[in-house]
Image 1 (cartoon, rainbow, N blue to C red):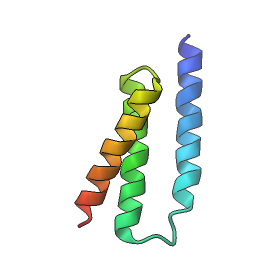
Image 2: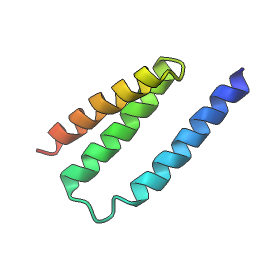
Image 3: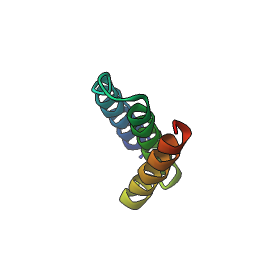
Image 4: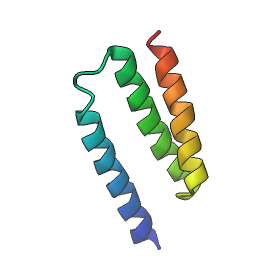
Length: 71
């Protein structure tokens, strides 16, 4: 069970890294929003044991926080 959880986290981290590589041409506020959403998604997934609702909720909250920080 623990190996599956570690695999999910690794896949999520790799996906986030690839997605952030596409942020090179974005504005500073757009980058902050994307980074916040990614970090929130990881946090939500970890805190809720990988549930879809927790991951999506974390991404939304992280995205909003990242957007507001760069205003």
